[in-house]
Length: 167
Figure 1 (cartoon, rainbow, N blue to C red):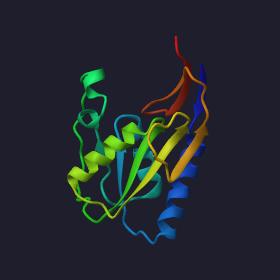
Figure 2 (spheres, one colour; figure 1 turned 180 degrees about the horizontal axis):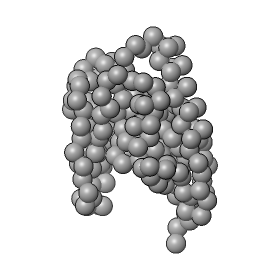
Figure 3 (cartoon, helix red, strand yellow; figure 1 turned 90 degrees about the horizontal axis):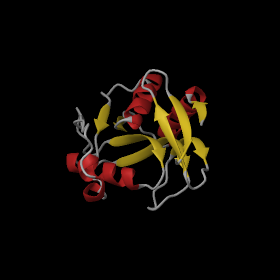
């Protein structure tokens, strides 16, 4: 098992996001984190970037395409978006981009709230194994992992990544 500190990648992500927003002349974006790890990362980025709009969170449990296979997750959290997404620039944050299915589910849920002007995807870790054509705009760490390896963000107070082997 390997632990990885995320402080520098988070700082790099905040800088890259600020640059992206400036380059695209986006003045007041909203930020939404995907439960659970993405919400932790979003909270840190939201603070670092000084975004004025309240931080939103999504629980995509009901939007997953494997819902019938994995069943209901026992700790479903409510989604909370306290502002309109209609014609707004949304920064969608997740901890790990792997297959792309979590992001697809999150986009479906966001569109239930309205049609955003754009969605900027920021992920702490981008790893191999994509199943859908989804690409992040901002990545903290590129982590090629072998089959049988997984990465998990642990927190929420001291955020760190743990790479594990399948048992």
